[in-house]
Amino acid sequence: MRHSLTNKFLPAVAVGALVLAACGSDDDASSSDETSSGESDCGATVEDGVLTVATGEPAFFPWVIDDDPSSGEGFEAAVAYAVAAEMGYEGDAVKWVRTTFDEAIQPGAKDFDINLQQYSITPERQENIDMSLPYFTSNQAIVALSGSAAEGATSIADLKDVKFGAQAGTTSLQFITDVIEPSSEPFVYDDNVGAKAALEANQIDAAVFDLPTALYVSAVEIEGSSVIGQFPAEAGGTTDEFGMVLAKDSALTGCVNDAITAITASGALADINAEWLADNTGAPVISE
Amino acid sequence: MSQLTRRQEYERGRRRRGAVIASASTIIVVTAVIVLVPRFEGWSRVRKAFFDREVFLDSFPRLLEAFWLDIQIFLWSTPLIFALSLAIAIARNTRSPALFPLRAFAVIYTDVFRGVPVILIIFLIGFGVPGLFDSRAWSNPLIWGTVALVLSYSAYVSEVIRAGIDSVHESQRAAARSLGMTGNQTMASVVLPQAMRRIVPPLMNSLVSLQKDVALVSLIGPVEILRRAGIEKSNFANFTPYLGAALIFLILTIPCTRLADWLLARERRRTGATAVA
Image 1 (cartoon, rainbow over the protein chains, first blue to last red):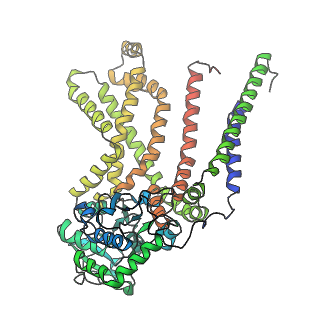
Image 2: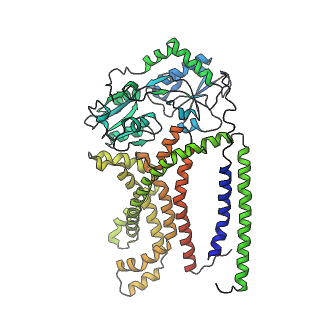
Image 3: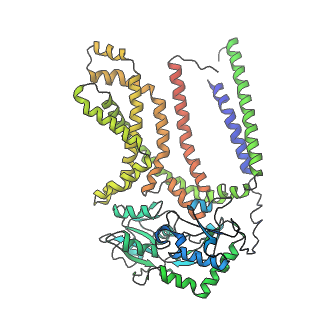
């Protein structure tokens, strides 16, 4: 039967050889920065005269209130309108769409101009997408049920034997694995809803969120839970800086950055923060 | 090797010719793809997003490591699925009037667990049942994720087994009973052995499917390869880790599918059918 076997695999071998050949010609370092103009152009939007802003589905409190960003209520909804106004898009000239994380990073034409849903700015991500200047800086915070192994922790050393959970693709997860380094591998969920379900099902001791989310989860969503600690950068934590996602080499990036700089300088951003985000001074600080 | 007959010579020639044609057409198609795809204006973007060499090399070892969890879930759920689906199939094949409740249960079981998507079963059992326990050991998502997979897959596999049992001719049962075998003996030593041989290919099919679906357990927390790829994707904002994960799955599933093909071919030979080119 040997001959029939070789015959059968000959086409497959041919494909393999060709694929290898194709991969070999991979090194021509071309075409990566052909369009990086550096010039800001506030008119270069997806839809003429309209700024299309993307957020998650659903969008969560306190970032967007009642999953209705067009109301302008909630921190990110308000920031989007403030930035849009700086760029010259007022009221009805702002249109909302919903995307997942993957839609925000996939190659090809985007159906949004800016996308904000608590994207942390990291150098790795900036290789593949444009990220604006930060519009918010958050500490990481731990939420646990009363009586959990994490309760009463005051230092990272107290947290080593805690079973953690976090949402995939967040810096909260990186924070667990890189800073806390717990003895058991953290569980990871599609979204914060999964992390909250696991907390309630007693599958994890504690979940890590950004501080505003943590304050909301503990105060409203999960009975008997509390923020047992937040980690400022100076205490060995990693602070998260949220930036807006734009298509790689977008002509809008410079314009968006100018707008964020302007609302930061004018104090408008601080006012929005004070209006929509809970005062976080009550949450205890955990040190290294 | 002995001298080939003229007929065998002729057939060998035809096979060679077929292989050459297949290779040539394959080369043409693949070349066309390799030549044409890079001509799309967005190819450099797509190449960077899906075929980034550095991201691939960086993430691949962690993907491989996470794959071990998939293999473990696969290894311990397979025998459970087989045992449960065999029990369900046999329950459904009972003939005694007194066992009607058992048959009804088997029917309802297959209806329910084939009717609900695996993902939903994993969410419902994976997050729902652990709430009953205070002990962390019993609320482990690996346990309940596996239970969900076993429940779902048993419903499918039991139908395959039932089809196998039904495919054994009634005269086989009659002959066994006339030899004085009891119903159970007939099932165990006459019907099942024949049925099992016939359903090996579809069973392999279910196993290949299970090899991929174990990744769904990641929905309730454990970090296996699909989740690990998603984490790497988010960290790099690049889809190349998904390609790495797909390759790792192929390394496992292709040998399994080839094995299933081989078993199917062997079964054809055994049952006397010849392949018509």
